[in-house]
Image (cartoon, rainbow, N blue to C red; front, side, top):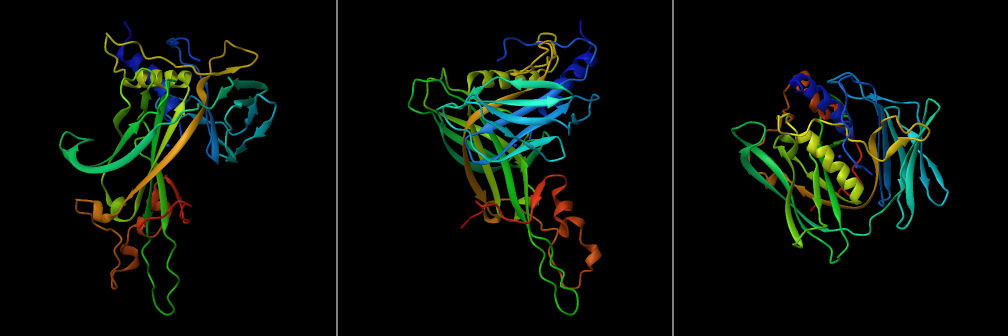
Amino acid sequence: MISRTKKSVRLLVVLSFYFFLPFSCIDKLEFLEDKQEVQLVIYGLLTDVNERQVVTVSKTSAIGLRPMEIRDARVSLLTASGDRFRYVHNGLGEYFLEGFAALEGESYAIEVLLEDKVYRSNYEKIPELLADDVISFEFNKEPFRTEAPESVFTVNSETTLPNSTDPIYLRWTVEETYFWPLVYLPGTGFPPPPPPPCFISDVIEPNRLNLFDGSGSSTRKGNFALAKRLVDNSFLYPFFVSVKQLSINREAYEYWEKIEAVINNQGSLFDIPPASVYGNISNVEDQNERVLGYFEVAKTKVTRIYTTRADVPFSLVDPCQYFQNKPEDSYAAECKSCEARAQGRSWTNDAPDWWEFD
C-alpha cells in the first residue's frame, strides 16, 4: 500500500507541470517510481489567431516549488512543408513567436534544442470545427473558498455545437482584465499630469480545466460554468472577461482529461494512483527519456464581455479615494503603483486594442 506521503509527493510532481502553464498521443498512464527525478517540462499552444504564440520550457524542481525555468533553450516552430520559425526568449523560461497564426491544412510541431539534445513534438493540424458560445455573468452569494456564503462572480457559457457529424473536442480558458486608476496627488504649485491608469490581467481559476467532449453528445446545446472568483474592489471600474474557446484534437483532449483525473485524485484506496501524464513530446535520440508536457494546435475563438460598478449588487469600497487634506504617505502602495496593485499579475499602462465599452 502506498503511504499518504508518497501519494502527495507523486501528485505534486504531476502538478509541477500543470501549475506552470500560462490563462494542451497518449497510450497509457505512466506511473512514477518512489525515487523522484528531475524531468523536462515543455508546453506549447499554437492557435489560428494572429497573436503572441508561447512555449514554456522548465524542469521539475523540489517538491512544493515551482518548476525551474530554462533560459538557454532554442525553440522553433516547424511546418510539415519545411518552414522553420524561431521563438524569442523573454528571459523567464517563456519563448514567444509574435504575430503568428496557424493555417488550416498545415501541420505543425515544435523543436527544442537543449544541452545538445533535440526534443520534438508530433506534428499536429488545426481542427476544422468551432462551437458558438454565448457568454454571460452573474453575481451571487454562495460558498466558494469557505463554507459560509461569499460574494462570488461567475462566468457562464451557453454553447451550441456545430451542425456536423464530425467529432468536436473543446477546452476553455478565462482571463480577466480590469481598469485601475492610480490616485492623483497634485501637490503644491503646478500640478503634475495625472498618472496613467493600470490595466491588470490574470487568468481566472488557472487550476481549473474546462473540457467538453462533443463526439458522443446527444444534444446540440450545453450550459457551463467556466470560472468563478470572489468579488473585490477590482470591480469598481470596467472589468473585462475574455473567454477563449479552443477546439482541439482527440489526443489533446485525452491528455487534458488524464491531467484532470490526476488533479482530482484524492488518494483514496479505491482511486487510481497519482501518475505522470506524458504527452506528444520526446527526445529524438532517446525515446526512454520521459518528457512532460504537450504541444497542441487549436482552432480558437475569443468572446469578451464586461461589467461595470452598476452591475455589482454588493457594496464596494474604493481604498484609493482622494481626499484633499489626506497625507500622501497615508495612501496604500496599490494606490500609487501599478506594480504594487498587480502583485505579480500582468499589467500595462496601455489599454488593449479591444478595450471598448458603452
